[in-house]
Length: 148
Image (cartoon, rainbow, N blue to C red; front, side, top):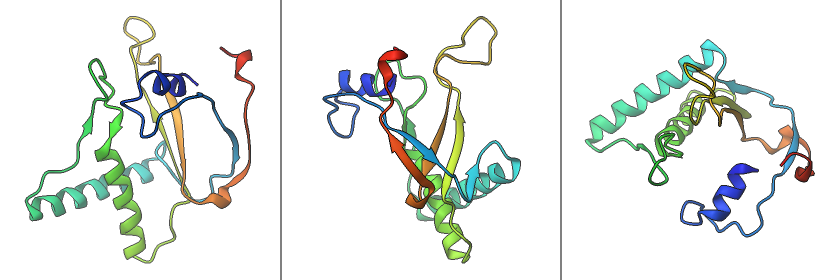
């Protein structure tokens, strides 16, 4: 909800204007998940990055970069590089005739530390990207006024 409110207050960052911020909840069965809490899956992403970098180097063009959304964005929320690497993971699997991933799950340690010396941060969250709509078993609009 904080992200939706942030986008409504900063329309230059949003892809489309957010006039009424809200959140959609979902019941998700992740299926074949590229879960980045697992070593084997992090290795897949590293391999994709190296192959993508090699392709960009051969073509002599600059790799996409993660960028700040504005002044003070140290988390680089415009994740063009990350997106390119994940898309390349899927292209590699397809070219190798491997089953596609249905979803991706990753932790994002964003924001300032919660306290001095902490590795836990104020905006830390787990994000799930669902690629296969059959993984969504249901959806709902949570009642957020209870949690604000």
